[in-house]
Image 1 (spheres, rainbow, N blue to C red):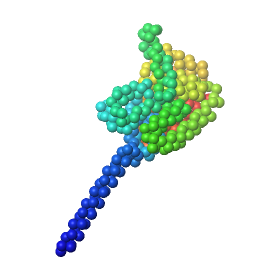
Image 2 (cartoon, rainbow, N blue to C red):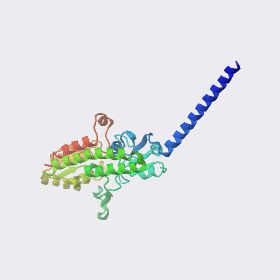
Image 3 (cartoon, one colour):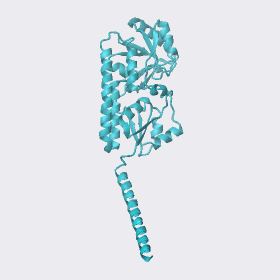
Image 4 (cartoon, rainbow, N blue to C red):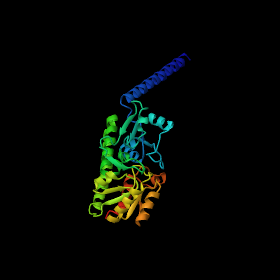
Length: 321
């Protein structure tokens, strides 16, 4: 009996020793993971609007998840973050946006972020151009009749889109050096697709003699410059502004003199102005998508930046001939 008691005590002691060793190993493992940045943990990213979402998702790959801040159907120019939106961004590891000239609300968000959250301005290394805008108020004095804004729509140029992707990859690589090889490889693969897109645009547009297109939304300036085209915008950087009668008359003359066949508008904005201009000139309207958002239906159907830009190219070829 005494012998059995001694064996039982020894067994309990051994189990306790094993448990203690297990706890110590577990603590050492946690310490080691913490010191290494816990490379197994998924990176949580919030991206401002659709192109930033896709570019980041392509670079991140399986290393994390990307959440879209400006939901489909919401106009990014008019978006204002709620308290809940700001709170969600503060919890993220990374926040990606295009530029403060597009996301004018970005400063409000980034002002609340701690050093824990990496902020990536994708267009930071791209020089934005100034857009000369006509005032829609015909009573405005001549000296104040024009406004000057920086055009943020760089993502619509496949070449500048490559720069944005690389900026995102470089910033993620710096914050997570243990994942650098993955991020750079992912970026390289996606940039190859953008390079193919650029070649498709050149092949389709370079031979054209008629190189002017008319659009309701002045979002395609960078694309036009990249491929030697001329964008004639009905009005401004935001799609729902109202043009002056003088501007409509001027555009009607441009359409007639250059045999322009289409006035472009975007699906998320009212086509009323584009339709009025097209009717007056006796031509049709068509969609040119600025890719500021994609509907859930479009995303579920497999639409993405590349596929929509291919559709834009097909639409442009109706008048760029």
